[in-house]
Image 1 (cartoon, one colour):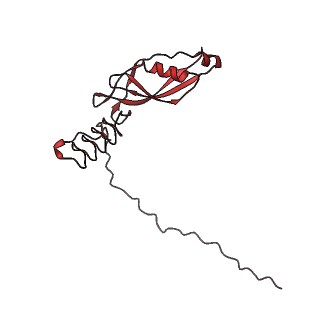
Image 2 (tube, one colour):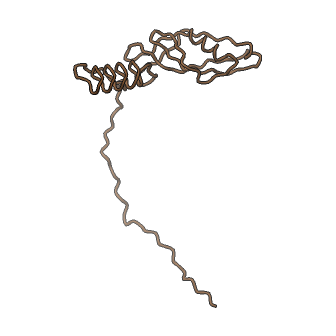
Image 3 (tube, one colour):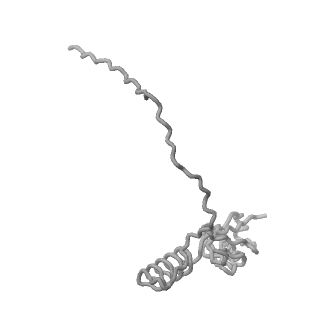
Length: 182
């Protein structure tokens, strides 16, 4: 039986453009970024505007005040105050962060000293508008009683409060408490 002959194919030739395409020029106007501080939080609206929902005070939803949702005040969501979900703000978006005025160093526990435990305890805290601290939770702990010692120390810290539009506000921040053996 004879093997059929396979025809040889010629490779395709590249397609060349007759002339280059003209450049596209878009009408772009250079404009500086907006220098105004925009907080991103709902502003107070007039209460006489009527509510947009079952709530009262000009807001939208079932809450009272000018906010959106079931909370009280100008915030968004449940809770009270002006932040998202109510409660404390977070730094950024027009919130000036708090600064430490007094820091109290924690003491080691004997168990941690014997084990040679070192590192950081990271806490989520609320710096209140009066500069005091309310500890929320331990984000990263070390154990051996050091988490509790960090909480005791941070409760004694004092801050200049965070500010929104010049007014002191509660703000949620993370703080790290370092434990080092000398």
